Length: 493
Image 1 (cartoon, rainbow, N blue to C red):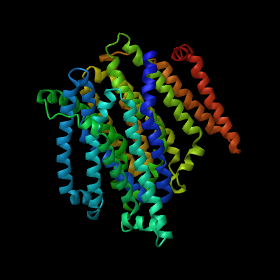
Image 2 (image 1 turned 90 degrees about the horizontal axis):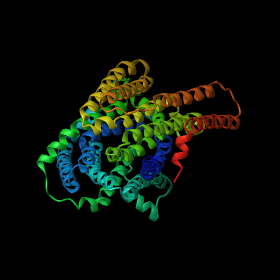
Image 3 (image 1 turned 90 degrees about the vertical axis):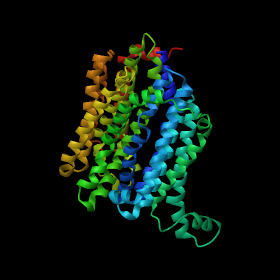
Image 4 (image 1 turned 180 degrees about the horizontal axis):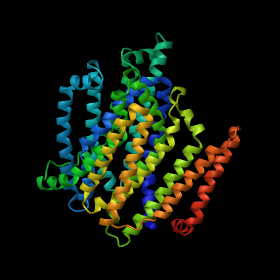
């Protein structure tokens, strides 16, 4: 339990940047959905969906390989080799991206949107260069510096979004002279649409983040170990395939909508679907914070005799937390949905599907310990690519028939299959005695409580929220009485 408490503490620290930062970033959702129309918001999401997929290739599994080999050999040698590798490929990517920016723009949107491509090429290159320095901070247990820089990144992005998307248009429309007007007129080009300034804000934030990491980057020595690099690449390329598969599984539906739905509604539907997806991100905040802390934690615990018992306990408590968080989102959705502009609430009924998908993928992250610790990352790649086949085929079949509903079901099916295969294979290669009965029971209990809430026809809003709060209390009481012993151990000094 002391090790689990340590993980919880690290998760909380990383959560400062991941959760608090993303909550601040989440404030951009009402900004976008109240200022932009669904089509322009769909354009925004469409571009970022491509970025999510390409970012995986920019890092190509080196981050996870760094964690693995930093525990096996000289840390500085691993740091030098991994960073120089990514530095070389990022420079190559910058050159190719800028040279072919017009061609890429024509394929994605139109030939006159090459500036979008150039901005994103810079963003992705800077983010890739920051990956290994951030990994070093995590491996060195410098969680507070990691969190601070991440938080600054989000704050800068938010600040410039507010400046360009809200303040500048307001000043241009309401002032004709004065210092503020002069300032805005100097930096704000009215010929650019607001979506352009969202991208520019991201570029500014990524640039400043890379500058803040200079103390770590300047520790680099120009010593590249070819033998170590080959070992790291051998370990990393299945991680690349896994990352690519995950990005495709989460983003491909939105990309495919652009080409499978009628042109006049495609970006509009992407915008509607993505807005509801953003509500599910409230759950992914914890999942992301957990991932940041869990990866180095799992490697560190591997040498302990009780490591597998620790992994089992972590899994159970993780499921309780994400299931409870999902239940809270669903039962308070009448309040949470106000975050979205009225035009963007059409897909709100997708939330149960999307949240369950996030629970499944969170369980998969826990299960992935078996192939990472046994160096069987190729198995992880096979699982993830299996999920990609499901994602691509189901999206291709269902989107023309059911629109974004088809994409949501494809996502859920993909993550469920990946979770199931990983569990079955993991028990053969690295058996962990997970408490499957209790884990399934907690998920079913939350589903049952949500089902009850949908059958209660309560007209009074305040009374409805009180009843839903009671239902959440029922879940917490059930958890307390079922796992009373473990809970008491967790709070012991």
